Length: 400
Image (cartoon, rainbow, N blue to C red; front, side):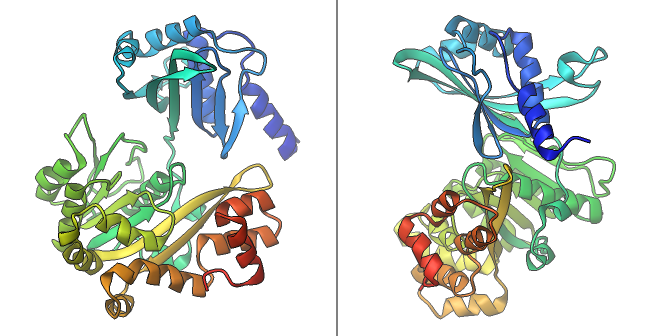
């Protein structure tokens, strides 16, 4: 029986390319990446091919660099000549890409099996060479993990699906926000027949539904293809289609946030993602979308509808994988009343201080993993933010 190290070495060997790849070779490579938990793929003419797996960069072409003319051929064959044309005009090209299995086990996929990717193409100077195509592919996972596998804290899991209001999932790029969002919605559809679900995404990442789904079939709309924007998709479509739950890929703009708050006030449960590093950041992050004269009114509207904010971070563990750490606040009426005792512009700082007092911030949870020899000191300092904050965690004064 293979050991864990032997399995890992076999997987890494399978992800290596030994010679200049043809377009078909690259398709096979993409499928292997999708099957072996690779999150991102970097292709650049004149450079090595790099992949990211469990937050670690791995060179997939240690013996050679991808030739520029081969990169041009791959882009032309897989995505079309128009990509190069748009890049030469200084434009950025974003698209989704799918490989689908046929009868002949094409590209290593069984019949009906798919591998999906989000692709970004940008022209850049690489290794001193101008006009190089830099392509980054994000693997879009087709398998949604169960909430049980995500090991959510019991208090958080019990409050994930309120009848109405707004739930926010925060974190930086690659923190698993979309995975947590999808797992929550999939759980809902598999357990509550009356929960009609609609989503607005850019792009559609996880495909909801399946044989265990008992609610009305979910309608997932992609911004830029199915609807013009998150804001219009919410205000002009979703709110008029009587869903119980509305999932939003990202809440990045004023009109989308206004519509999300309105949805929460009108009896829907709206859940969306934000780029934030702590729960307390959620309030200023939302409020600074708006002109100063509107912020106080928006703050009280947000506090009225908010049900929870959870922030997640994936940290590199010593076993070569990653650990998901979360901090969260359930905004019950008692806690909302406590915040109302403070000016609205102090709510974020108050929330972060409350979490630190109880040892429930992500850096404090990471420090406990460090003490238990689960993560390195270097990773611990990175999570803390600075060496001084690491030292404060060490001497117990963090957050004071």
